[in-house]
Amino acid sequence: MVVGTLTAGTVADRVGRKKLMAGCVTLFSLAASGICALSGSVAVFGLGRTLAGVGLGGLLPTAISMVGDYARGGRAALTIGTLMTAHHTGGILSA
Image (cartoon, rainbow, N blue to C red; front, side, top):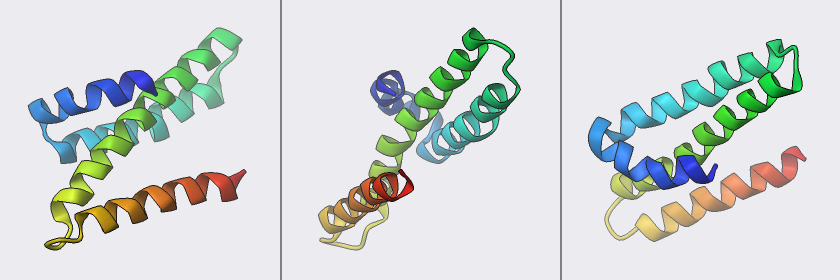
């Protein structure tokens, strides 16, 4: 996830935030999950989990920046705070 988080800003500047977000979702939902589901060894499973981490790591900072851009005037901090709270609440409830 660190790799995805650290590279998301640079990649978003080059390809655009919407394309990066779609790419990150595709990477962790289709490619990485498919690799994990079909893996026949620990090494292939580890590759799938690594790709999923890169995708998820790139998704959150991209979503935060897009939410800040689309928030109504003066509401960016509240909207981003709501996004972060919902993200962590979902993680806690899913466990």
